[in-house]
Amino acid sequence: MCGIVGHLGPQNSVELVLEGLKRLEYRGYDSAGVSFIDERDVLQNYKKSGKLENLIGFLGEGPFVARSCIGHTRWATHGEVNDTNSHPHSNDQLSMVHNGIIENAPALKSELSSEGFEFKSQTDTEVFLGLMTINLKKGMSFREAVTASFNKVEGNSAFVLIDPDTSDIYAVKRCAPLVCGINEGQSEVLVSSDPYALAGLVDKLYFPEDEVVCHLSSGNKNLLNFYELDGSKTTRYLSKIQDLSAAVSDKGDFDHYMHKEIHEQPELIRSLTHYYFAGEGVPALEKAIKEKPENIHLVACGTAYYAGLVIKDHIEKLNRIHCHAELGSEFRYKNPILGKKDLGLFISQSGETADTLAAQSLCKTNNLKTMSIVNVDGSTLFRDCDSNLLIRAGVEVGVASTKAFTQQVLTGMIYSAAMNGILDNPDRKKDMAAKFSLLAERVDKILSEENKIESIASEIHNYKGYFYTGRGVYYPIALEGALKLKEIAYVHAEGYASGELKHGPIALIDEEMVNVALVGPELYDKTISNIQEIKARKGIIVTIGPRGDEHLKEISDHFIELDFDGLDELSPLYVNIVDQLLAYFIAKFKGTDIDKPRNLAKSVTVE
Ligand code: AGP
Image (cartoon, rainbow, N blue to C red; front, side, top):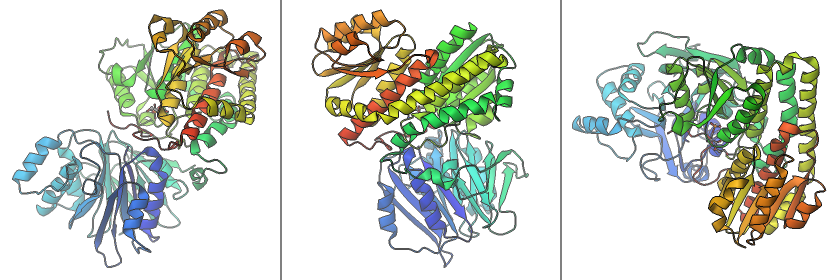
């Protein structure tokens, strides 16, 4: 999705905004641009299709002396990828950038054209430029024009604008990510679509609610002011100390963020355990389990949905509460049966996924309590839910989610155990904490031997297609493993319940197909017979299974041995680490853009 960064202050705005846009590259984009007020107080606008380096090349040698700048990385929704459709969109009265979709753009476009506004681009965004231009011409102040224009547009959007007369920056949003930040020492103020862009640049973050106009002003001591659409001042924003250091923005010794993030998991597992068993997460957990729901509607998208399938299994087995796992994009259109004592449980790394937010809003409208299992503190989902369990995964830069999946599942299991009273029993709590610690240890071991997985990847990275098969709780892991491979290696991969292959898909099996069989201690015999069915048809068998199993070793072309003992319900997460590494190394051999895969965005903030 589009990335937005704005800066106002004594330091060089253009450099800071470009740095912020670089940090947002992971979100996926196809063009970039900046607008700034130069040292002669003239509004400059530079924009270029392609990667950021195209824009930087176009900007030419700096330094650009500017104290006010807005920048944008565009993920095209309306209008092809070209320089004209790139943001910012500007004229001599203003410059602006946009994230989201203006649903009523066609109607507004004909209205504006009839009022003499000439469109240059194919974008819906330019409609807002037209509204602003006409409102300013009517003599409105800049903030009044922002309010009047915003009242006319429908749909989920965030707008950030620069006023060339004052160099001030304005921002407003509806159901789209937006965050402001202040660096008191430097008397600087910034705005972005993602807190990660502000990491290390500001002391405090401010998350405005919908339809709050943010005014980043250079004129007076109040660097940052918030207004309702009627012009009155407001406190409808959440503020919090910035806890992200600039250090998050480097890969360290790793070739890719994804690889670094896979390796962060053992430490994250340990810190999550402390956070909810004895740390500052305890009050949030106690709040989350205050009311025991009759049913749970567990809604998410993509990897977060697969995490939800594992959590569903855990909650139903332990608490015997019916858990409906739903895809966000489906849930809102299926007229779900929602009981007043049901819980809407939403899982999301970004907390900004449009389909998940819409599902949460549907539950809220039906008076359900809603809860999130979310990574980004202060995100829209975080602010809209009655209670929240943070997954404490840190910033996840890789578009393909890895550590967030593990932390989502573990947080869901902690919620399930807390609901069951396990954490109130010292012995059972200790046992659970010991199991988490054992998982971290076992993951450490897999990571220390990742070269074994890398060598298998070198042998299987050029096949026609890949099946991932698993039974019970390994079925969601098969789905997630296949998604990882699809996302970053651009190969066809499909997760399947082991027992289902014989009902049709086995027709695809031949010597060009790889089957990654996930074999946990549970349902062992049945899974073996499924492997035999594939072997009989010359499929390539990669098995992830219990260490020392001679039979598995004999029937597999490649056998990755794991130590399952003592992990119990955590075993699927253990297997998933192998899937993450397998996908990573296959993609690496294929030379794809692992951290910024084609066509993908880190957070899908449009439907
Ligand atoms: C995960 O690898 C994908 N990038 C994608 O499926 C993602 O999980 C999905 O878009 C949901 O995102 P969220 O967790 O931020 O809501």
